[in-house]
Image (cartoon, rainbow, N blue to C red; front, top):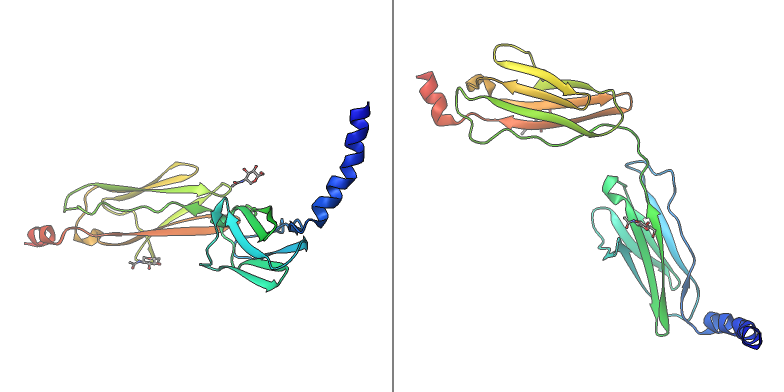
Length: 222
Ligand SMILES: *[C@@H]1O[C@H](CO)[C@@H](O)[C@H](O)[C@H]1NC(C)=O
Ligand SMILES: *[C@@H]1O[C@H](CO)[C@@H](O)[C@H](O)[C@H]1NC(C)=O
């Protein structure tokens, strides 16, 4: 009983001493919960206790944040540092930590940035093999890795809707994947092939160049 009483008496003293020790205290900060891809995100790390001067550093998921690609940090005054992400993307997601330190110690606070899932399709890049010669068969997959089905797939060649003529065919394998097959490539197969996936929210496109080996084309033409 006596021990409990002693702790209770000590407790206000401990709290008071922490606040007055000069160690920094950062005000909690939060990102907007309404961040869409392309929007601007900004948070302020404000020191509300402690003795200046302070040194501010920012971390993303434990790694020191470097000012680049639209991410910048700036000290507004002796007590405040500002983090700005000029255009958030899917890989902006993460935990952003601000650390303020002075000669007495430091404090850290973090906030989680989470870009709203807007449901727009995202396609993984695809490529044709580099070693295609006349008469070979080639096949690429256009796979949607993100977004809400149903999707409409369209294939284009050099910007024009692909005609399923001769050796060229397109087949949707499942709700998320479309397959382009050219059963026998020839000089006419050369070009820039684009897959477009769209849903009610928007669309994504990825393109790949098909280039039949030159030496073999001349053999074919001869
Ligand atoms: C962010 O922090 C929260 C809470 O500590 C944790 O659950 C989550 O896994 C962290 N996210 C990342 C990407 O580190
Ligand atoms: C292929 O076509 C796409 C879509 O039209 C275009 O954005 C891209 O620049 C083209 N690539 C090349 C190498 O021509």
